[in-house]
Length: 225
Image (cartoon, helix red, strand yellow):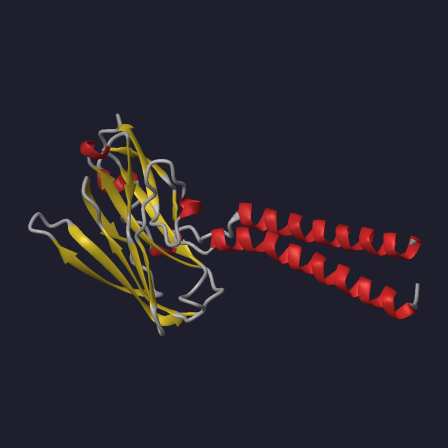
């Protein structure tokens, strides 16, 4: 077999391995490009501080604002003050916000982890249900409406722009002051920073190792041939 033929086959093998690795890496990276809510579980009747985090823009355009629509079944909402954002609210007649908009003091570059937070009281009507919080992410160029909710038989992975969802449990037995139960009066700096998605990071690392191993095996076989 000539050197030219062997070189061409090695090139095709290398290209195939790289293409396969790219496909494997694309799935976890796409899954991480959502607006995540933490925690994603809460009890009804008590205050929970929900952190809505992201690390992407709209097609890599910097984020300028995040608007969270407040769903039905919420008895109280207090946005958490943070120096990176200014806050505006649209209030219902009962004083509970129907939406909260966080506007970035400086546009958040894609690839930079950021988060906004709300202290939320889920009403008894929301007990034992899943509550979605539609999020409109506005960027310097374009926007993304994270509002899709999985239908029966679907999962979040089936959706292009899923809304963050919180699973609400039974009514809490805690009868204490709601304002203190979530530290509503604490300093904004105490809000936990968003963490990188561990599943996406693990899958990406595993895919890279598998791609390298496949490349080594392919070249070893070619040399033996």
